[in-house]
Each structure stands twice: as structure tokens, then as C-alpha cells.
Image (cartoon, rainbow, N blue to C red; front, side, top):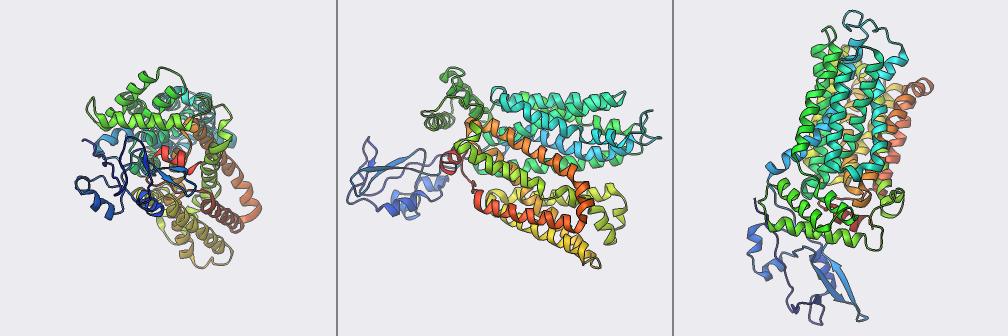
Length: 555
């Protein structure tokens, strides 16, 4: 499908010359120019064939990297960039595979969560484990359960200094290799030591994939559906959890069933790796390497054009892809004027990168410390109290909650590029805070009203899945400047898994110390703090290209 770009508009009484447009006494007032400049830009054919005066009546101004110089009262000229580039026309068929294969990395992360819940039961059964080392201590069982978490922490540390060298595509291929070997080693483990090594390797795959997948998707998809696709990756994580639950329930009565539960991940990871081999590298990463001086600019530019044409399904020699690549190069060179060609190791803690780290890191931190593990821990008892017989079976409870999470994530996927990031975050986090207060009230003085607890549980899960669940990772993937995006997302992933580990380990002692009612009240206070953080610090990035976010939001 060919892309239709908007044609330039020129105001009446403005002279059109080879030089930039100059404000004259008879030209449009400055406030009108600003109003038109901030309007959305159509891409339809019918718009393109309208007369210019009709276009002006619609209050629309085409873009590109269009600049106008407007004289101030002092006689000096001020330069204004159009704030929005024309939205890209694309075919959905061309974005499916560049999304699907990276998203499998998220599905495999979720699958590990779901499968482990059943695998630990199978592994400890004298009759069903199929081993003579089934009698695991609490510490050994904890290592089996959290082995992938330790691996994910290690993986996010490893990719921090090498992510820009590897690139997004090779990063995901590496993750698939870790997934395959980790899954197979765990499935065929002859003893606990090998099993733990396999869990660690699989965790390395999680850490690398959760870094590379949002990067690749954000940098290769059209900007107007970036929110939808990265939120859809979160839905793949939930799908993976459900798949793990279903495989676990199917194999739970088989001898050595835990081996099958972990082994199923290997063929999925193989598909992911082969799929990433068939995809091109990220065009933005190629241009970043060129600007960093890692190779001839012309060579990397040609590679980026070919990669973009493959990603969009455009024919070789397509002029639109060449224009987009040229614009991106100009944007990169402009952003890095008077700066070193490659970001330093600590640059992520300075300037716009620090602002992005506060936003992205803050979101993934609050995502974990607003108590999701604690709420889900009580899901079974809450449903049992309300009289749901299925709640007697932990697996069925998990499936029920998982299906609800899937439905609510689907709502976020459908609405994130329509409503925007901030409305979903503000509304969702407000609901999280309310649900936690209701849960605290239930355990404190509303114990005779179980429907309050069930409503609060569903409110929490639903609000989490339309806010912190998908939106945190979406913001992390798009908020960092290109030159520090790899390092910034590494730190965000590390923050996510690190805070996850802290909450997991602190949950039991906090529960003993505070009791359920005060624990939920504490999480409710944290949720209110996170709501204030969202309102004050988190910007709206809906519809902006990654370059526009870097130039307009962070600076």
C-alpha cells in the first residue's frame, strides 16, 4: 500500500519563495498560525484535492518538517516547527509479524508464571514427580519458583551496557536462545542443581526479552498504533499466564507432569527465534549506529531504508520510506548537535534522559509496590467467602481471575490510542486506590458483606489491567531519547523485577506484622501517592512519533 502524504499549505498574502516563509504586515496573525499549526493533520485523498482556502477553513496545516519564520515586534524572526508529522498510512497485515514475534517473548514470560504454579505441585508429589528428590525444603522450593526472577534481574543488568551494540533484533534472538535452552534444561533436569540452572537461563531470556520486545515494537510500528501494539504485548503476557494454567491443569495428574509444563515453552521460543531471524533490524537503531559513528552513514541509511520497506511491505525504491529515513537522520543530527556521538555510561542520569527515567522508572516501580501480588494472594479466600465453589480449586480461581484480566487488558488495547495514556492511568490508579481501601474495610469491619470484597477484588484487577499493567511498559518503551533508550529501558526492567522481588519477599513478614486490613491500607496509601505522581509527572504521548516525544516532551 502506498502512503499518502499531505501537501504543503501556504497562507494567503504570504510570499512563497525559496527562502523560509516571512511574516509580513498583511499575513495571518500569530495566534491564528499557532491555532492552525496545533491542529490534527488529515491524510485522506479527499483532503488533498481540496482547494487551499477550504483547507484553511478546516483549520488544518500540513506538516513534514515544515518551518515558518514569524517576525516578532522587535523585528527578529522566530522559528516554529509544525508539531505533528502526517500520520502514516499502513496496512495491518504489514505490522502483524513485526509485532507477533517480539510479543512471543512476553507470552513466554507469562507462561512461566502460569506453569510454575502447577509445576511446583507436581514436582513435590511423591507419586507424580517421577523423581527421588521430590521432598524439597522451603528454601529449595523458593529457589525453583524465583529462579527465573533472579535470571531476569541478571539479564536486565547484562543488557545495560551492550543493548545498543546488539540491537533490538539480535537481542530478541538471544532471548529466544535463552528461552529454548532454559526450557529444555528444566524439562530434562536429572537433579535439582540442573533444574535451577535451567530456571536461571530461562530467567535470562525473560530479562532480555522484556527489554528488547517493547524497544523493537515501539521503533518499528506506525506511531498512531504504537500504544495499541505495546499494550497488546501486555495482553500476550496475560495469555501466557492462562496458557501456563491450562497446560498445568492438563498435565497435573501425569507422572513427571512438571517436565511437560516447562518443556512446552521450548517450541514457542523456537518459533520466536526463527521469526526474529526473518525480520529486519530496527531502522531507528541502524540510524542511531550511523549517528554514533559506528559505520558509514550512507551504508546505514540504505540498510534503514530497506528495513523500513520490508516492515511496511513497500516496494524497493519507494520514495516515502526514503523521505522518512532522511527526516529521522535530520532529527537525530539536530538532537545530538554539540554532543558526543554516543551516550556515556551515566548519561541516562542526566538531562532529558533523567526526566524519562523518573517517568518510566516511577511507573514500573508503582506498578509493583501497589500490592498486586498481595491482592491476588487473597483472591481464593475472597471468592470462597462469597460462596463460589470453584474457589476451592486454586487453579480454577487463577483461571477465573486470568480470564478477567484478559478482558480488561483488551479494553486498554482498544482505547489507549483513542483516549490516551494519562486518562487510562489516572482513572485506573484511582480505581486501584479505592479498591484497596474497600479491601481494608472488608477485613476491618465489613466482614459480613462478602460482595464488597469480591467487587473490590474485581475492581482492583480491572483497574490494574487498564492502567499500570499495559501503560507502564508502553511509556517506558517510548519516553526515553533514542541515544539512551537501550540503557534507560534496561534500568526500568531492572527496577520492575527488583521491586517485584522486594514485594514478594516482604509480603509474608508484612502480613504477619500488620494484618490484612492494615496491609491493604498501606498499599492504598501508596496507590494515592502513585496517582499524584501520574498527575504531576507523566505526560501525554498519544499520537506523537518517538522523535516528537524526544524533542517536545522531554526538552
